[in-house]
Structures are given as C-alpha cells and as structure tokens.
Amino acid sequence: MSETETTDALNLSEDEIKAFCEAIQEGFTPAQAAGTDQKQLEALYSLGHGFFSSGRYKDAQTIFQSLCLYDYRDQRYWMGLGASLQSQDNLTMAAEVYGMAGMVTNLQDPTPFYYAGLCQLKDGELESADATLNALKLMGTAGDPNHEAIYAKAANLHEIVKEKMAQDDAPKES
Image (cartoon, rainbow, N blue to C red):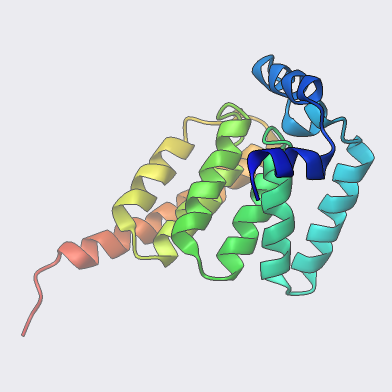
C-alpha cells in the first residue's frame, strides 16, 4: 500500500495530518492529538486489566502496548505492560518497561523499580538488580506509607541479591 493509499484509507486530509503532527510537536499525546476520549482509554485499560486478571497475558500485552502509544504519560499503562511481559517470563523487556513506568513519574515513584529489580534478580542479572535497588532508595518520598512499604520490600529483595552475588563470588570447591 502506497503512502497515498494509506492516507486515503484513513480518510485524512493533508491539513488534518499537519494538525496532528503539530499537536504532537506541541506536547500533546497521540490520543489527545487524535481526539481520543479519556473514557475510551479507560475502557481499553479495563479490557487489558481483565485479560491480565484472567491469565491472558499476551492479549493484555497487546492492549497495554497500544495504550502506551496512545498516552505514554500514564504510568498504569506501562505497569500493565511490564506485568504482562513479566508474567510471560520476558523478564529483560519487563524490567525495561518498568523503568519506563518510573520515568513517567520523573522518578518520584519507587514502585516500578522494585519490580524491575525483581525481574532482574529472577533473570539472573544480579549486578543490574543491585544497581536498580540501590537507585530505588533515592526515589519517592520518605514518610509516604506506600513508598515506605516499597522501600522495605526492596531492602529485603536487595539482601537476597547481595547474598546471591556473594555466593557467585565465593570460590568453588571441587
């Protein structure tokens, strides 16, 4: 399909395409630029959540990937995508997606990095897990009960990482 055929199939005029591109350049999300209603995004999120809850992780992944493209600023979409990937044992990609979830909040929420560290540990990426869990301590807000709970879970996870790293460094007896 040529570019002209694609444009014709979408029924977009040249002015509409220019307006969309200008909106993106001005900082609008693709969903906002296309005029997608927030209710539609919430309906898709509910669908993805439903797929995830029923164990249909690949279907959930597809929905959450779409949502991340439509509105890359919503942390829930990245967390859903990360959880879908993690549930399919795609741990490297899940850790990266959780990192994106953390970036969306300007590193103000340590939760995504806890899950990234968990994926890295499970994947055997001990040095990455160690670095992630160390960095997590600098994120969030001390005194926030949700963040304090994550800090505690991350500290426990970090101890496991350190123990495994020490085991890997210990000389092997034959």
